[in-house]
Length: 468
Image (cartoon, rainbow, N blue to C red; front, side, top):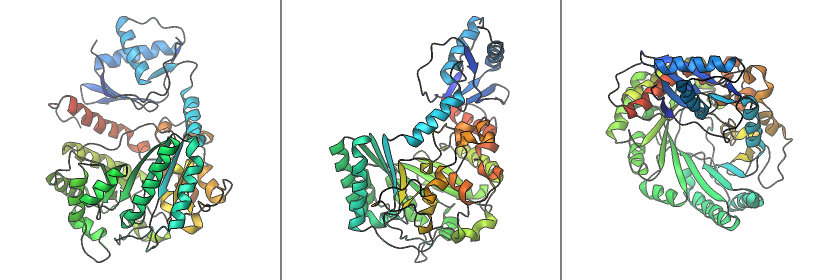
């Protein structure tokens, strides 16, 4: 029998059980791909593999024998495939209910205290005037007193954590580079004193990401930078103009060319109904000419009217179902043009920091929030970092209380490990239909698996012909 082509290694959570009784995973997804293969994907481990027609026949025999309930009598080729199915999580020990294991891991992540995560906005000011920005025209820089309060907050947890992660946010955080430098020094010193690991990333518009700034960020243990592009230069410069009216695209690209040699680069492309495949094609050509094709990971986000400030864009926003369709086309084009894919259907332990007891977002005044989209909106704050944490605060409970395992539809969904019920803020604040609460994986997983398989398999066999 031909060996299965493994495209993505599984995320192994526990050691393999010695139990001989085995059950087929409820999170298996098997689908044909072209004339020569079947794609096998397991949502619980994230394993992706290609099966030949012969493999697929053997797979079905193994599954049928396992479903009979008694200890199966496997042929040699069935035993070989069964071992690979075990490794990928496509089968699991009978006494281990994957749903219960997922539930345990979800709660462990939510209530665990071995790590601390903070999203910190050292300033809410910005040098851009994006037409859809939810932050409106906010101002303000973090004071010395608030910086000390944040350091004290971290110090209180320092002896109980192994890891401390920071995301620098804003506003435009690079407008407060001096604050980032000072706070990074405090966090590094605390990590050395209390023996925890410290690391950071940054979300920036990229305009101030000059080579000296990049060098300094790398020194300050920033590993990844996320920058937003709203399309090719002609579109981006219209939608993400500077406050003085000048364009920003060309400067951002030049900055990324240098930054990509020092930091991991993630490019977010905001998408609405006015964004077309031709816009993306044009942008990818510009990135290729800049030498960023092999140095940057690209992903797409659908613009959403998260509050009244950006309600003016509501009419041009995609529904989740519609976005899931165009998203597939966008990723297909990425693969065709030789770009890497920065979106894989990977299992998660929790959706975001809103579900965690040990994760918070805070603005320049030290006010705490449960969601990045609410930072700076004082009505959404759950208190200040200098005060005792109030876990019974309505603004904490509103986002924290949802449990996907108490929702019958989520609990029985075969992609539950990929979204865990979706965005808590959407559930609490937006009044959306159930269709809109689901992530796009709900609607495009089969098509996206084809794109992912092609992307990965081309690297194994570059001569593969177009199959999608």
